[in-house]
Image (cartoon, rainbow, N blue to C red; front, side):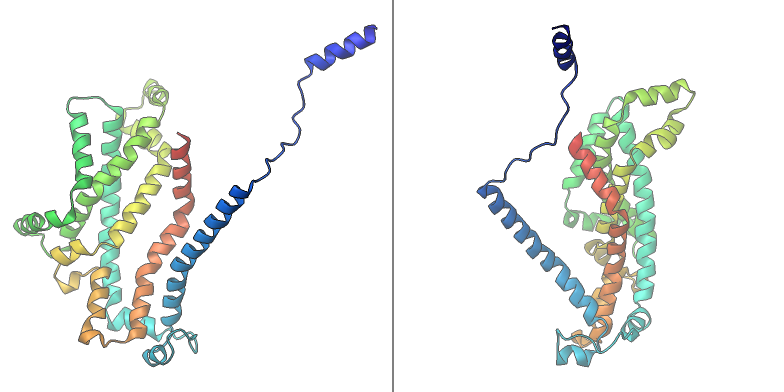
Length: 302
């Protein structure tokens, strides 16, 4: 009797062991939704990937091969098209200009944008909300309306048709999006960490650069990727504000090369130039895709 009472008491005190969770059987509607979604994703992947593969394949073909059979495989890996595009068409110089303009603008906008977002998110002062809403208003301002004022402003400053003028313009257009994106990241960081840094003797600058900025690394990486993609593919601003051929960026140089002689150009070299233009974007995305996915996951968990 005593043994049974002890066993009963032991069974009540022992927590139940969690067994393997049984998966709920998928219904017919779930299978239909899964099939449709997978089919749509496969079609979308084909729409994106096939033109890229066709462009890469065509970049190794001569103009005669392209017109003889558009979708046939090249006879070999002919890198002469890339040499012609880089040297004869001047894509190398345009590529260097793009690296200078986009790289400089990206560094400046990330430093200024992160500092501005941190101050607006973590400090309360008169006019802070007005500054934040002005930043948001900058996102809604269309580029077309700013072209004429920008033209005269840069002309009066002596920066029209120069790379510094293009860098300043890129920074101005990317700054509102950067502040808007990083503002939410800095708002969600715990205030106790900033207070602990202040107790340890850290000032505002040290707290920002050594404590808060590393904690916002996923958001900074994501907005840097978005800014790089937007600035690298920018076309309207350089066409309107940079008419000096020596200062052309890649998008301008590619359009100039394609329209030469009434589009009667070396099409093999033209496709090679397209690959050179697209390659940095793909490389950046492949390298930083983990940071981009991590920031999105953090945003959904908050």
